[in-house]
Image (cartoon, rainbow, N blue to C red; front, side):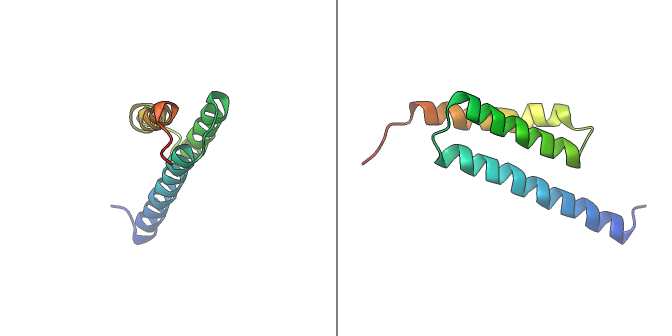
Amino acid sequence: MPTEEEIFLEEEKLRRLRRIVDTTAFILRRKRLIGREAWTLMESTKAQVLELFPDKEETFELIYKPRFLRIIWENMFQKEVW
């Protein structure tokens, strides 16, 4: 059974994961990044996530990468509203 400290540390890692992913999603939504910039940001985020959770690359590929790609795709075709 995990100790209180282990639970706290795992929760802290999850909070950090949420901040990293949310920050990346925010940047992808708000800035008009060209393809290479967006891809570099996404790969940097993946590296940070895998640093926290080394065995979760498949999870990143299944959950977060499609989310980021959807945001990038939506921004490519979003009309400017003035």
